[in-house]
Image (cartoon, rainbow, N blue to C red; front, side):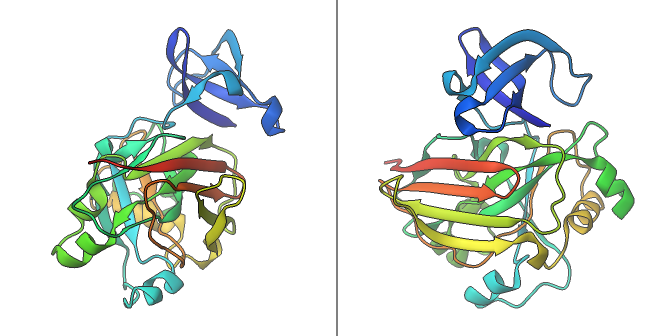
Length: 264
């Protein structure tokens, strides 16, 4: 099942995305957040007639560094012996088609295409792998936008990864998905019809799998409903500049597109 959060003439709602062909997708409004008993209101729109938002509210977004060997190698880093975690603030989250805003202080901002895990209603605190699987509500697409020059210059990563708009999420949450071997892709270009493939990896190549990540993070901090874990990025990260569009997709979920603009 695919859950989205969207703007319509009457306000902001959650809904279930239905259909297969992109041109024929519809969204059926539900009367609460997806974690609760899902009850359709009877209102329905064509997906093309609403504006999608980031699909969930998060108290925090937890990033995982160097979780693909090829990405660690391209940056000259050794593989971590245990998951390397960091926090992206909730204010960094944007939705589909929202602009990634490049601040003038950052001279080398890069895309990082990622599978994102959404924690469910029960949350997770000090859970084992089995408990981690039960705590997962679903999956969405993420882009861990990073100011690489600031990441290199600062002793920690908060500024490099925490600017407003540096965490696109969407287009929706997919709840029925085997994520053990999915394609993760990033394309960039100025012409949406002629995009260049920059990243192309598979989730099977993660150093630490999803259950391991959720369990590990839950032993550091309590995961609350709606929290998001970004699972790391494959090789191919590269600079994005104003005027370009970034497309990130994960097989079985969908595509997340964001234009790039200058903040200053």
